[in-house]
Amino acid sequence: MTNSIDAPSWNPFDPDFLLDPYPHYARLRDEDPVHRTPLGVLVVSRYDDAHQVLRDPQTSVRRFETSETTPEHMLPLRDRQDERVPSILGLDPPDHTRLRKLVQRTFTPRAIGRMRDQTTAIVDDLLDELTDRDEIDLIADYAFVIPFAVIHAMLGLPEADVAQVRSWSHALTQTLEPFLTPEQVDAAMDAAVHMDRYLTEAIAAKRQNPAADLLTDLVQVEEEGDRMTEAELLSMTSLLFVAGHETTVNLIGNGTHALLGHPDQMDLVRTDESVDATVADELLRYDSPVQTSGRRVMHDVEVSGVEVAAGEMVLTALGSANRDPRFWGATADDLDVTRPEANRHLSFGSGVHHCLGAALARMEGEIAITRLVRRFPDLALAGQPTYNARIILRGRDVLPVRLGQAA
Image 1: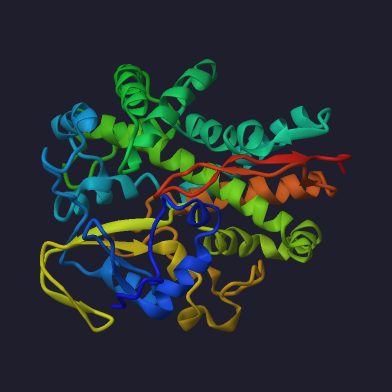
Image 2: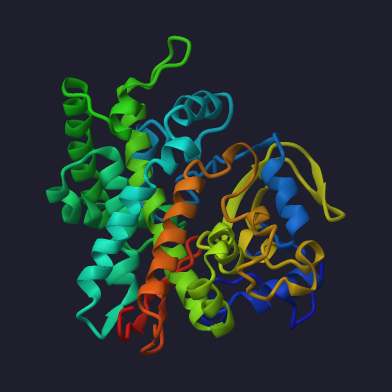
């Protein structure tokens, strides 16, 4: 690994990196593909290396944090997480295998497919509401609304609760990041109390009055006599809101922004419905909502000729892997909504922790983006976007757009 003064670096606190990490990724891939950060964490930036780490069965998703490495203001949050049953995101096999097997019986692509009509109706209703407005913030007024409305409907929860639960979910989403401000910790702790109470009551209601919805399915799912405990149900349901919401918001925001910067690709989406099969995956590849995924290696292993010792923490730079020309070829940095193998991106991870909600995210992104650009053919930027300054979840905080005349 290089030691030059102008060495490539992985620094998500750098404003230039925040705005456009992809040139930084390119240097890492070329010059330092297994990069050791000042914190000692390794970052792998090439597709094959990220794929190797993500699919290695001798890795762990547990960070093994201690009070010595956790900032004092984040200790209450860490203690709360330690007291709870971990979500499926924080479990290794065999616990992860057991829980995922149960959930997969309800969260199938076929079940998600049944949500297409309802998702389309949610999107079209929202677009109808926006037709009288010339300019909107695409994030707050559109991208932020859709995935939450969809998961709320899938779970069969009352529409009247949407706004309140959405605010709790937004505060809790911050906990997916490694560094939080004291204010963010306080907001997350408060939201957690309210969300737990709300979902506990919702689960109890579904036990008493089952319905044709995902929450009832999760309550009733059984595999060879095994069922989720009450604590596991609460953890899984909360995860659907927290992990499933913000990532899809960023897919819609990042994807629309990418199309606005590539008018030829926007025209294709607007005029050719055959791209519906590939557009969501290509937008996920081009500017991934999830930029990194961490694993602790549990054995000595070699990655791109570099020895990685057992116990070391490795970040797979998914956003970089998705642009690696060693895998994607000379067009790796191009946006091509017709790309036939776009679904080989790593934005949903890989291996046993491949995103459980991948089919849902694809469907929501496809419907939200295609129907937006077809309803408003003159869609255009109305100002400069701002970015969310996150390390893991990359997205736009504000994306002002001019809608123009509805088709």
